[in-house]
Amino acid sequence: MTIDFDKAAESLRNWGRWGDDDQRGTLNHVSPETLKRAASEVQTGKMFSLGLEFSQDGPQVPEVTKRANPQLLACDIDQVFNPNNPRSRFNDDVLITPTQAATQWDALSHVHYDGELYNGCKAAECLTARGTKQNGVHHLGNPGIMSRGVLLDIAKLNGVDALPADHKISPDELDKCCETQGVSIGQGDIVIIRTGHLRVFTVQKDKTKVAGFQAGLGAECAEWLHDKSAAAVAADNMAVEFLGMESLAGEIVLPFHMLAIRDMGMPLGEMFDLEALSRDCAEDGRYSFLFSAPPLKITGAFGSPINPVVLK
Ligand code: UVW
Image 1 (cartoon, helix red, strand yellow):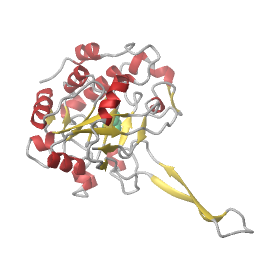
Image 2 (cartoon, protein in one colour; image 1 turned 90 degrees about the vertical axis):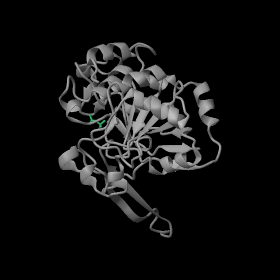
Image 3 (cartoon, helix red, strand yellow; image 1 turned 180 degrees about the vertical axis):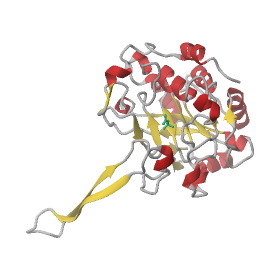
Image 4 (spheres, helix red, strand yellow; image 1 turned 60 degrees about the vertical axis):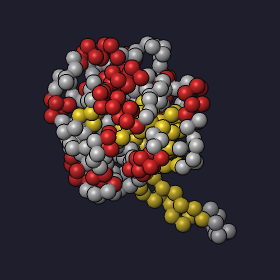
């Protein structure tokens, strides 16, 4: 199934829905009621980190992904505060990293088309070499990103550790997964999709396979998320969306990114490590939980490193 991109964009566009100055998009779906419901999911006290380490041995292969891995430089080691009293010492460091080197949120300024970003911001006016004047990731950090999270384990639904690269997830498959797992998506929920793709890095330790064609959401899934009033979507792949020839050479490049980020104002979470969470959800049959992943408030940034946590 292919979509009529412009028709879909028009019907999903949330511009003005939360005010002309809004820079938080679908996170506005998270209400106090959503958060109380999210907190009520906590039953066993089991906690999971969904973040990769930000490491110089991270998943980036710069020749392919055009992003470097983080570089950590110690700038002060074993320094004294006071030479007359040298027992107490300190160590400081500097981190140089693409904001999207590992587990991350895409801010609402990360992608755009036809010269406009989410909520009609003009690319020519807001994008600068020192970041963006509008839709910077710091807006997503105020007050943060927390909600009820729901894992949709599409790899498990298909009985595989990882979906094949040509597997494009459809809205029907998302519905089937909800039904099989006995969960439903409510307003303000954060939907977390497991494809199994990141296992090439976390399990097989082969970072040459992290980039390239891979399973993910088809562009039609933007409408599904819109209809559910989801607050955000995340996945264990590079781009949340399906990456195949058609996503790069079709009507528009990266159609799901464009619909979700630019038209709906929905943050995308990428490279989430879902293996331990997937095992636990399969064991206890509970696929919903309290989810928290506040971005760093990096003023004007197009994305932010995160260490998402889940509490069940
Ligand atoms: C792009 O680089 C456009 O996408 P991603 O959000 O996957 O980093």
